[in-house]
Length: 66
Image (cartoon, rainbow, N blue to C red; front, side):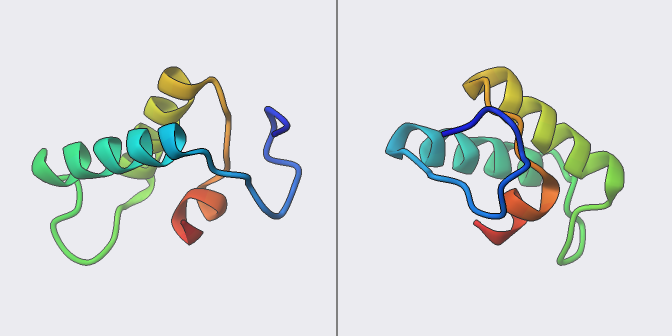
């Protein structure tokens, strides 16, 4: 997988998916999703956490589609 978000589709490994789910659950438990969506700042947390943990920089739309 390319380490940039220039592609429209991402290839997800099991490890990447598990890390993404953990980050997402952590964000929800912290109250970052009080309604049915994340706001800009909270998506930034998810995107940066995912990049820190996996080394892959994916866009909001790629993460949101997962």
